[in-house]
Amino acid sequence: MDATDTLATSSGIALTVNDRPHTLTVDHRATLLDVLRDRLGLTGAKQGCDHGQCGACTVLLDGRRVNSCLLPAVAQDGRAVTTVEGLAGADGPHPLQRAFLEQDAFQCGFCTPGQLCSAAGVLAETAGDPAPTDEATLRELLSGNICRCGAYPAIVRAVRQAQAEGRGASATGAGAGNEEGPA
Image (cartoon, helix red, strand yellow):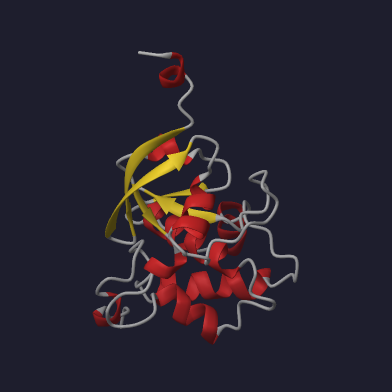
């Protein structure tokens, strides 16, 4: 081992992003958000505050909501990432994406990808429990995502719509188009 080996600034990692495997060499300073946007061209997750406070960069990591701007990419080796681009299934948009459209749950749209990933995570995380359907609980669960336009009432309505139709519990939309809501 020479001095340059101890000063390595990059490492190889494997990620599964939106069900597609990727093998990458990443700079140790790169965040997961950097890799998704700059290396893989997935620009749905937005670079907002870079401090994990606005939620614009929210993606699902092994099915759980995370702020991708805070996570070193090198530490995510072997993990599965779902971005807003991966929510839709072969049959079309994820039920949450349809509900967001139907409820007009966006204005400028900058926060929408993070809001969608966060909502998908909330519904998947709470599936099976007595699902939170009241507005206050959903607002609290989604509170890590900031909408500067103030579209929260429509966002909560959209999440409640997807939840009520029983079609929003899947983190991804695979097969979602074939699901039927309650009678």
